[in-house]
Each structure stands twice: as C-alpha cells, then as structure tokens.
Image (cartoon, rainbow, N blue to C red; front, side, top):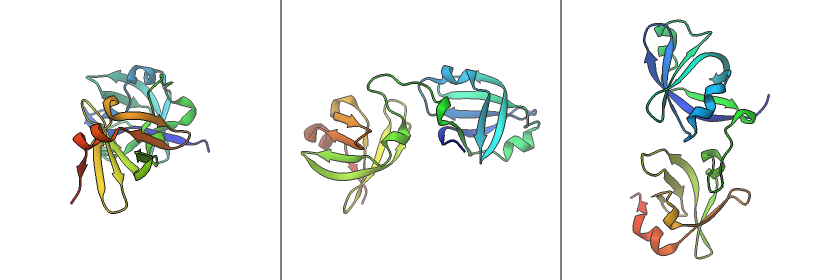
Length: 169
C-alpha cells in the first residue's frame, strides 16, 4: 500500500445526507478539489462533491456515506490521501509531516526536536522537546535562518527565537 499523508480533520456532520465539514491543513485547498478519493481510518471514501467554504474549511460528500449518523461516527477523524496526490509546494513552503522530527538548532547547538505543529491563524505553532523541557514557538520567517527537510534541521536566529519562545513548566 502506498504511503499516505494527513491533509485534514473531520469536524462534524453537515446536514442529514452524510456530508461532512472538515478543516484542511493546506493553504492550497483548491488543489484538492480534483481529488477522487480520501482515506479515513484506513477505509477508502469516494468523493461525490467537494466545496471550499471559508479557509481552511471544506464540505465533502462521499459515495459510501449516506446519512448524518454515519457522518457523526467520523467526527474528529483525520483525512488522508495517497502521498502521490499531495499538492505541489512552492519554494520556502513545507509539509507539516516533513517538519516533524526536525532538530531545532540555535548557535550550532541542537536544542530540541519537533514533535507537533498546530495550525494557527497567522502562524503555525511548533512544539519541540528539548533535553529537559518542552517548548513552543510560532513558525515565522523572521526567526528562521534555514529549514532543510532533507537533513531534518530547522536553524533559528537566537535573539528572535528568544523573543517568541514559550517553555512549559
């Protein structure tokens, strides 16, 4: 089976005919209008209609999802597609999955490793685990020196990073 990548999450049923409202984790939602199928809990769902609402929300109807109760059972489930179906990205853009596991480097010292990234209005929030504590920071161009997903590293500017980082107790 081909590798899959998570592109969104089902939020709730929409209406009584099995349509769902979902949040997509991409700033290129219109690209996904051409999708024919997605995977939810390893089950393939054939798409009948795909409507973009206010970013980042979409409404999707599936061939094998015919009523509200069926849709309710999928609430909070993640939506996956085949990796070969992912949207192309531009320079200085990355997939969240590619950033997970990257080492955070400041002044040539590894200070942590990314374990989660949350979508947030103006900037994604990076969660990283250091040697002794967990920390988070917004993924902003002004604090980034380099992101190299092939080397699994994110190099940050020390001063700018120190101004925005939050440490967990």
